[in-house]
Structures are given as C-alpha cells and as structure tokens.
Length: 362
Image (cartoon, rainbow, N blue to C red):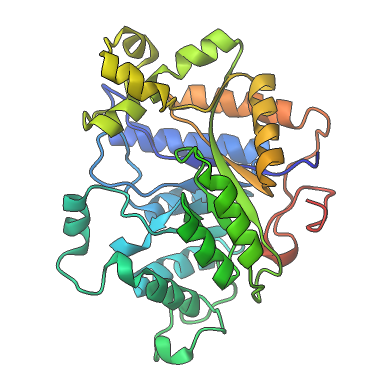
C-alpha cells in the first residue's frame, strides 16, 4: 500500500489546574515536534466557550505556530465560516500567506463550532451570517483568494491583500455528505472528520465527492484527507490508560458536563453511571490507542478502506509531552520501511505528496 502523508490536528487543550497560556505553549511545542518529525500539516481548530479548548481564533494561533516552525504547512481545521464575514476571513488568510508563503491552509467548515447561544454572540444579529448563506459566502472567500472562476461582481472592488504573491490552499471540511458535495462541485480538496464522525457516512461522503468532482484550476482530480483520533504508547495497556481523559471528555461533550481535561488517574477514578457506560460504548474518544505498530495497523486499514490521500491525526491527551511522544512513536512506525522525510513541499496541484511518490501514484 502506498505511504500517504500524515498531519496533525490540535485543539490547544486546557488541563485541569492549568491555564490557557500553558495550553497554547503546549500547542506550539507540539507543532515544533511535528515539524521536526516530518508531518505534512499542522492544523488548529476553532471552538468557542469551551473550558477544555483554548483554540478560539485559528488565524492568531496559526501565526504563532508558523513563526515557531520552518517547513510544515500550517492551517485551520477549520474556520467555521458561518461565524465570520467572508472578507474578514479572506484578509486574515491572505495576510498569513504573505507572511508564510506556500505554507498556509484554509480549512473551512459549515458548523458553528459551539452552542447556539455562543454562536449568536459571535454573529450578533447580522442577517448576513447564517448557515443558509454558506455556499454564497464560500464562493466569496474563494473569489477574494484568487479563484478566477467566481464572478468578479461578487467582490466588487474588494481585494483581500494589496499584492498577492501566492494564495493559501483552501480545503472543505465536513462530517457529512453536504461538505463532500460542496467540495466536489467547487473542485476543492476535502477533509472528512472521521475522528468524531465514525459512521458509515464516510464511505457515502467520499463516494459522492469522488463521483461528483469537477476539476478546478488548482486541483485537477479529487484529493481526500481523513482524520482519526490516535494515541500510541509503549504498551497497549498504557495507551488505553492515557486515552482515559479523551473518553471522559467525549462523554462530557455529549452530556453537557463541560470542564478542562482531567488527568489519566482522575479519569480512571471517575464513577460512571450505567447510562454513561452505554454512551461511552458508542463514544470511544480515541479510535486507535495502542502500541505504535497497533496504531499504524489501524491507520493503514483506514487508508485502505477510504482510499485517503492523506491522514490527519487528532488525539486528546492530558499534556503536550504525551502528545509529542505519541506522534514520535507513530512517525517512526509509519516510516519504518521508508525512513525518508514525509513531505518535501507542495506537489502537483498544490497538494503535498510523499517523497518519491508522484501525485498520480499517491
């Protein structure tokens, strides 16, 4: 099976007894490790009003991450477009691209990334920020970022940056068939959020994306990235223990008992009701938790089942040191048979490809 590039998704997780500064420093440390280990991309999420997540503003955090790394592409996983005016998003990412040319990804999502009350606080009473307007707003962003297919009248005399030398890669994100169909229609690369949407929809979504794909000036054929939640440790038992906080966090999100992420010992000591156990049976929190070889086996199976061109590794753990150790183990096992660097830069169509592997072979 061809080796595909691996990337990293980070939420700047806030630990119990620690603050946001500690969480953000941990994200930067993890990004530097991912850069050194040869991961292709480092994306940060957008979530609001959540005690366990400090990643509230992807462009701000991306700027810090890019400043502390040298090679890895830095992106949003993603910007929740219904929360923002399109011109603001285009300006922010055009500025990031000018600062860090050919290293910036704009991953765009349709969900609010928060609860309805917080979404209302973000959007105010503007009639111009609604989910229903998503296709129109996405087209506006694309036009402002150099997509010549879009009617120029859409942006009138607006320019996102005075003199663009290059443009960020724009990705469509999704956990349903809707995002897949939008990405196909616009000829965008598509990232399926399998790390929290573990359903049969992944097969349907990717089939709709590939079957409906219309080539665009920046992408001539479908390109799929699939995310997964992973933790690798020395032993299977240790990995399962380290995955305890992710299970409790997944449970808290479904039950409304939000709080900072707790430690593995505290997670192991949580008393669960029968209903909690039933809920957790369908919400493992971490899909692949084991030794590096076990995790890699699961990831290779995921590539085989989905035909993914890339994988994005999420993973909720208590501290950044654990995350860095996990990423190091996975990188070593993933490239055990081919120890060369994972990515050399932008390949054909502007999408990074594995070293020694052409875009058509990946």
